[in-house]
Structures are given as structure tokens and as C-alpha cells.
Amino acid sequence: MLPDHELLEIFETVCSVKAHDIFMPESNALKFKFRLRIFTMINRRRQGNPLAYITGKKHFFEDIFFIKRGVLVPRPETGELLEYIIKDGYIKTASRILDIGCGSGVIAITLKKKYPEAEIWGIDKSAAALSCAAGNERHILGSSGIYWQMADILRRPVLKQKFRYIVSNPPYVTSGEYRDLPDEIRKYEPPEALQAGKSGLVFYYKIRKLLPMILEAGGSIFLETGFRQGDRVRKIFEGEFRNIRLLPDLQGHSRFVFGLDYETHS
Image 1 (tube, rainbow, N blue to C red):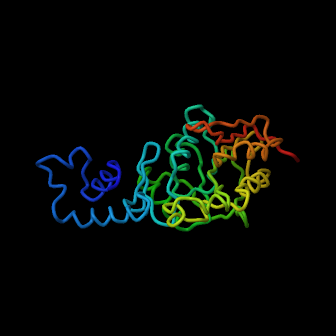
Image 2 (cartoon, rainbow, N blue to C red; image 1 turned 90 degrees about the vertical axis):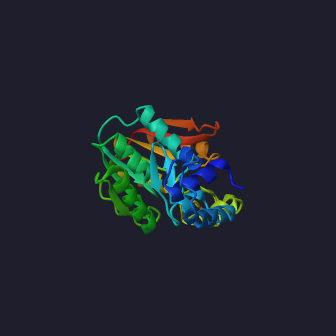
Image 3 (cartoon, one colour; image 1 turned 60 degrees about the horizontal axis):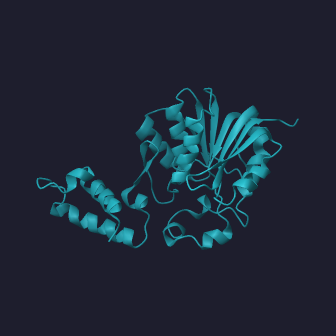
């Protein structure tokens, strides 16, 4: 069988009741009409389908986000990235913020919720991801005015403005690491949202190259990296910022690279 918390999430999704009501004697949650859907979902999960694709949702930070096949499932580490940014006060003004590789929109939407006066852009090369992100914006914020744009930074980004802050959880899994990922990830989640070549660093080098065109002087960048990559990513951005910080995740891995006070090189 599946872990209890996964079973309860499936029951809640199908029956539209909270977990604590499911097994009450007077509850109609497990009527016959629900059983087939529940058993179908359980079988899909046992076959390796990610739970978020089965239920169509994922709890992230303070909200429930809609998730669909073809869009990366949000990870807890990205929530840790946002915890650092928000709770430690790295964003101090209602400025323009860019989310590179926005996926389901968890970063852009969470920041818009915390900084409603900010002008926030989310870019991704995936039409499925942008559609999912826009749907999550409507669901969580209503019409908040986040700008969603299709762009592939490895090819021809079309951004024509600069930003005070850049946040990104780009693909960073190496080719070798990708082959060793669990089937649940490798067989179901979009490979283009995970893989980043032999070194796993291609997106960080590209972002550094784009800085003069997309980041304001004195601006900051906040990056998530693989759990073995933090120091290498920090070195990529050395010389670009007056202050670079390498911060740990909850497991103690040096995972988040913050570049503060960008120095332009004209």
C-alpha cells in the first residue's frame, strides 16, 4: 500500500472532504461512486506516477498549485529558496522582478503575493508551463498582472527591459545524474525542465552572460542549484557582484547562490 499521507490526499481529492472527515461513521465520503476513482488513482501511484499528476495539485509554500503532466512538480528546496528571500528581507523595494524558468509559477506567484506592488515577469520556453502558471495566478491571486512570456534563454531571449531582482531555479541535473534518477521522475516529469548537459551548469553560464542586458546596476540574483553545485555556481558569478552568498538547504548542502549588488562592466 501507499503511505498514509498519500492515501489521504487521494481520498480528499476524490471525495472533496478533509482528511479528518473521511473515516467518520456518518461520512458519505467512501460511497460506491467514489471507489473506482480512488482505486484507479492508487494503482497509478503504485505504478510510479507522481502524486501531483494524479491529484492535479501540489501544496507549495502557503498555497495549493495546480499541476499537470508536462510541467515540473515543485520541490521543497524551491520553497527554501523563497524562505531565504522573503524572511531575510533581500527584496526591499517594489521593483521589477524576473523569474527565469517559471514552470508552474510557484516563485513568481509567491513573490507577487508577498510584494503586490512589484512588477513581476515569469518566462519559460514551455507553453504547457506558461498555461499552468497563468491558471495558478488566476486561482491564487485573481488578476494580479504577472507578465508571462515564452522565452528560451539558451537560444534567443526576447526580454527588452532590465530587472532589479532575478530569481531562478533552472535545470541543473547532469546527464549522468539524470540516468540515475528514480523512475517516478525520469519517466514522467519533463526532461527539459531537469537536464542541463554534461556539467549541469549550462544555464548558470548563460544567465551570467545575459546579466548586462537583464539586470540593473546594484541589482541582485537568487539561484537554486543542485546539492553538489553550490560552490561551482558561486564561482561562475564571482566578479559580477560586490557580495556573493552561498546558503545551505535544510540538509546542510550548499544549495543557494545569492549575488548582491551587481557591478556593471561597461
